[in-house]
Image 1 (cartoon, rainbow, N blue to C red):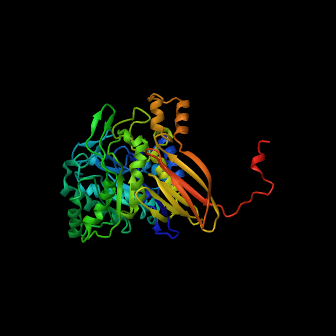
Image 2 (image 1 turned 45 degrees about the vertical axis):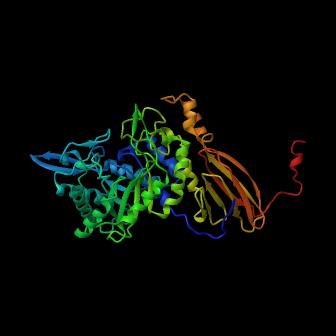
Image 3 (image 1 turned 90 degrees about the horizontal axis):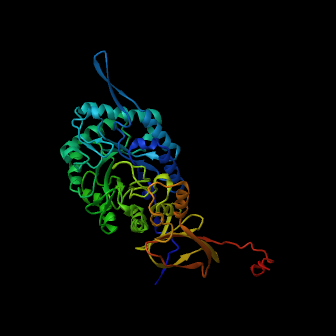
Length: 487
């Protein structure tokens, strides 16, 4: 059955899909490979904010205790903070700040997470923690200006419902951490945005209790945050993990949870940010590198803007060391890009979204159709579709179709056929970069009554973008004769 795409817009696509993207720990942004990867992502996609862990961990060097003449002191140093944020701003992206983890000298215990040992324990002194928060946020306001920093959401900690990220998953202790932190942020500037609780999936019961706590204590809160993943228990192998995935619409159900659970509470109506989402929560699951992954996430990326204010893909590149330094170029990392800027199929899903118009004409279980102010119609499809699209008064249209699938733009398959080399030689790297690009075809569509038919038949796990531009006039001269080209 052919779907007749309406001529009138049904809404605005919006930017929730690219309002934020995830990253590895904060100081990784000092690396050349990281900055080159982010420059490429910004050129072809253009995310607005970036969020990662470890701003206050010892690797960034903000909290610097010392002793002088027998008296203990603390110096707050922002050498790395300034370099990282300056690099972000130069690349057209702004921070989404996550406050964590605990500096070792302030920590109440020695429990850590990740290969790089982020301390997950509460502070020994809440007053010292508040001072650290005020100093850090105050420095950002002084350096970048209050008006700009008011646009940088400030999230308190990461997944405190998990004992791996917050000692004992102590809910009461997290409430205290949130209260002390939020008040310290607002002491710097009442206009700054602060929020939480950055919950992992499966902890939705925290949300109503969090709402009751901040309401009862009159604690500042400007947004609510949580995370979403659809993978099951991990089946470990050396340097890798396999997991079963739930249907992709489970992500949309998780996105919808905060507004449903907070209806009728003091937090009803606040912005909701999904500050991490992906299929698997493991940075060593090969599913992230596959063509399947792009097709799996396509309906989520196309529709989730109706449910939340932002949903942050975790992460933009594989420069990421939670489990240590990766051992192969494709190792199941979260990134849209591998090390050395090889594009994965899911990169192209986002790059396709970036080329779409802002007027939504049609959306269903297999495609999204938009139009831009110049009349260009774009079709993002992840399933077969026959469409009749509006072209205005034009009698014809020019189209370009870009696709990734099991056979097209699938660097994971190409690397496997290459023998899965652990260390790429320059020629192999160049070859994989070339093979990672989408295949592109083009042609002309005839229009009848201001409409053109577009028939899309997709290969397994294909995601395709069709860009249809009305041909308003034809400047072909009368003496042009294609049949005479070859004599």
